[in-house]
Length: 303
Image (cartoon, rainbow, N blue to C red; front, side):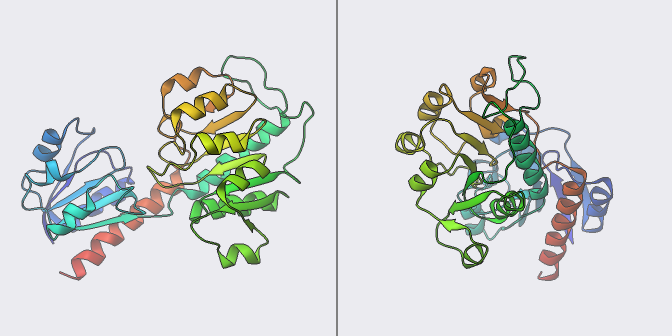
């Protein structure tokens, strides 16, 4: 059992899960907002031996160095790699601190978002940012059937997006670190990134936070009359080349400003950003809560 758990910011756990935290510590402290500096982060953690954090704030060495009692950090958000994490995992591990995160709790909402927005784009449903009625992408409403879609990053969410669009008749190809046998069995083509960008009309980037694969050369290869989705927690591109590309006859879809990058792009008529995280659904909060509690239980069993 922990002596003190501190939730340094809102965690998006369901109420029953927040209540259940008291089963694992003598004291549980919740903060209603995110800390604005490393100093404030350290003050909130104080003498706690367990810390819970969401995806908004960063917990680095500068704060952890001032908190000698910490032995467990629970990331109430996706953890794919130390490089993409908002916790300095390498420093924490050097101190003997265990860091556990979760995966695959909000992917269903991402899939529904991509399908929904692609249908609206192809059929011409809704309005643009400037209030003008959105025209069908080809001038005439069309189905997803036969559309060439390239998935950049075929992890869990990328694979789910690919499967959903294939159900609607899309032709799927993908780029990943290596070819995947299960994707091959489904008939998905493995392509080099630039070839994928050139050959497909719709590009869906499903990358980890901080991973940037689309630079000036990639945008030049992709060309115009393309539809680009970014489902990650950071832009999948360099800002300069993206800005030149989006000024042409293209469209870009992101759910949040975090995924889009600079807020100036919100005014572009061919940029569609709802500024709402599509993974934040009722079901996702339940899955997140269950996995966060399971991580704590499994950690305490080993102590």
